[in-house]
Length: 185
Image (tube, rainbow, N blue to C red; front, side, top):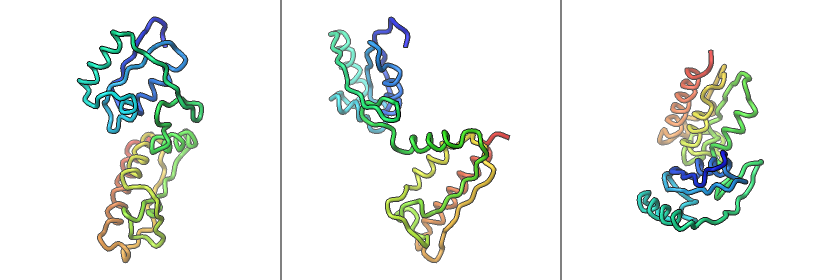
């Protein structure tokens, strides 16, 4: 961070705020946060209004009164965090990307990775699995990797009473096809 900057204001969600936290950690630059994400955990924890306009007014008043305080930060895997440490989908994608690097990738999706609420039509349902949305986000996070092959396995139509599993598998296959289109050639 360049010296001479007194305040950085971030209008975003907790993930982006954590990126700013990592850039500012160890500096004297103050961080102002405005609610712009889905959950705004840090904004809530600080007692700021969830309306961005109201929060801006509060932030301006605090800045004018020189009301700043130090925030205790956590550290996980060498990265700072304010209220959440990125242990969700984004963290999973980053671990996969770091491990794979530029190597050719084959993605095999066993449909029982999804929770039975989202994919009951499999011979081995696994409670506590991913949601379909989480699986989609993980696959979308792999865009640009050198994908050489993919499959979706273990769909069992006799157990798929409402065709939820078939729909989820078809959608994940679509996501895989999209990855092929985005892969380097």
